[in-house]
Amino acid sequence: MSDLRDLYQQVILDHYRAPRNFGGLKPNSCCAEGYNPLCGDQVKVCVRADGDRIDGIRFDGVGCAISTASASLMTEAVRGLERSEAEALLASFLALMTGDGDNGVPLGKLEVLSGVKDYPVRIKCATLPWHALRAALEGGDTETVTTE
Amino acid sequence: MTARAVAVGNEQRDSAAFEVERLRACFPILERDVHGHRLVYLDNAASAQRPNVVIDAVSDCYRTYYANAHRGVHALSEQSTDAYEAARAKVARFIGAPDSHEVVFTRGTTESLNLVAQSYGRPQLEPGDEVLLTEMEHHSNIVPWQLVCEQTGARVRAAPITDDGELDLDAFAGMLNERTRVVALAHVSNALGTVNDIPAVVELTRARSDAAVVVDGAQAVPHMAVDVAALGCDFYAFSGHKMYGPGGIGVLWGRHELLAAMPPYHGGGAMITRVTFERSGYMAPPQRFEAGTPAIAPAIGLGVAVEFLESTGLDRIERHEQELLSHTMEVLNDLPWVRVPGHASKAGSARAAVVSLVIDGAHPHDVATILDEQGIAIRAGHHCAQPLMDRLGVPATVRASFGLYNTHDEVDSLVSGLHEVRRIFG
Image (tube, rainbow over all chains, first blue to last red; front, top):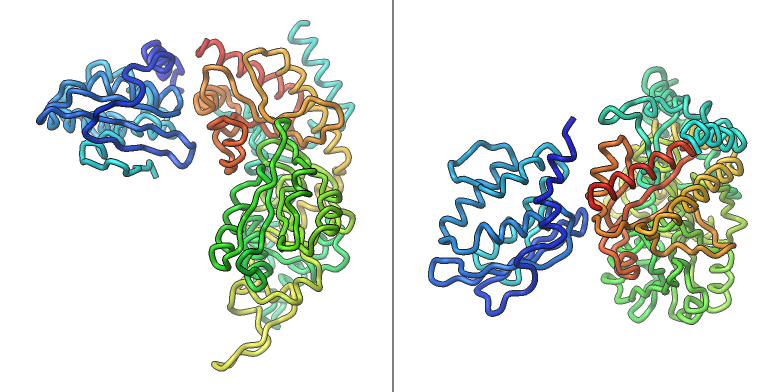
């Protein structure tokens, strides 16, 4: 049996109660929305790029503790990265969630979300903002990505 | 009060209603553990569990006499046909249908409602006509009407509900007019448990329009005695799996004169009289609407579920579930961090034993995960009623829905589970 304390770590609860980089981002280079039709959770991620560097990222939306904390931690981790570094981090995070090994990119503070992989039905909560980030990096603008 | 005293008190409450432990023993799945805890199954509005008699009836059919119905002259086909048609007669009697030919077997409530929308609605809806729903409908009683409105140029309207989660009958009456062709509403709301006053809706509808009244009875049939003749509606839809029967089987009841005038829904075998490449003739109802090989064993299982409900007694089931509901509301009212949106507290409000709640500072999905760890199965989400969630101003709720086998101890387990949520989310 998994322990709820591994899932709901203090860092996660803290980012849920007080999400960082929460709200709209103006000006922005690109925004994308993620939507989980199963539960209705939605998150909008906006990025601002300065050349290849992501110098601004914020998110907005309604979600559970896992998706909100994941989005909040993601914005902290991604801001200031080169686009290619952000893409590598994204791949690394998705690999952590699906248990698909390690691509060598350290996840740092994002490791607190590793408990989610023991709760298969909640993995989509954690990955939703990351799918939105990927769509935003690909220039999706008004596009909505879904977890289904 | 000590835990022991609470348990004894609950035992008395259960036995006063009926022998809940004897009934629980009929449902083998209730014996199992989930995450090291005895299962507390409070997701009955999504799908209920099955008693041994239903499981055995389905198994017995496959083991001893299964064959296609209405097809062969051999012994097995005759026996399967007899059992299938006997199940139809049981269902007809159960819901007070004057004639078992008015009972159409479908895959479930969703298919029943789509059938009405396409076979009753589509041929007669014209641009500017109206289909009147309510704000508390399940998606299965919204989307089929949107589809038929797209096809015909008619439009969907939704009668408002009050903040107490009840249909605003005055506003509903005001929205009826000569263009209203269909009124479609839930008998019992799947998300709120609100019991709509169908006879009143029928009376208002008849006085102001020629509309047919279509009732989604999925959440009513397992919890209260339903008599379609007394309700006065034109169509009544429900599912086997919510009434302790098998999945994949459901019912559409319709007035004979309406069914007889409707074109088929699906084409295929079993629904025709004679087929040529020029044209085909169709059987009378209900066969006209049962194209292809039906879900024979599930239909037979549904007939047994009906007998199970009848022998248990729907009046006793309703009383027991109402006691569980009162107990739940009593305890939740003492928790200031729990809200029950759309639940009237006033006396005389008719509710089935469904409670949709939200906890301050904890999202329903997180609540569901924490409860699941304690073996408690509830539903978190929008309950296929997104327009209702919008109306209540919440993205989702935690829904506990009770069945005949739930106990007062399980209400207490739910509440201690909610305290655990509170402890984690603080």
